[in-house]
Amino acid sequence: MLILAYEKLGVSGTIKDSMSNSYFMLEGIVNDAKTNAILNLSRNAKTTIEDTRKLGNYSAHKITYTCKREYVREQIGEFRALFDELLHKAGIRV
Image (cartoon, rainbow, N blue to C red; front, side, top):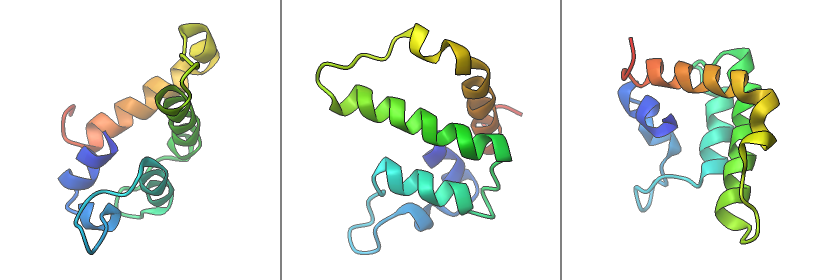
């Protein structure tokens, strides 16, 4: 969703390697997203996006970790708000 939002806003070059034209790793994209004035994430999204990245990173790179619903139950509202915001910024939801 972040990449789609960057592309929709015409600033995807800020999250690409200048030599290979490939996207940064997720941590680099998230770090840029938190400070990118054109993307202009809300204050809540800036804090929630790091929690989301960590859970995704654990699920992708820790062989014995599986993120379960009970792990995110308390934060589900924040996650939903983040993804709704990114859907709007990407032009998928208006």
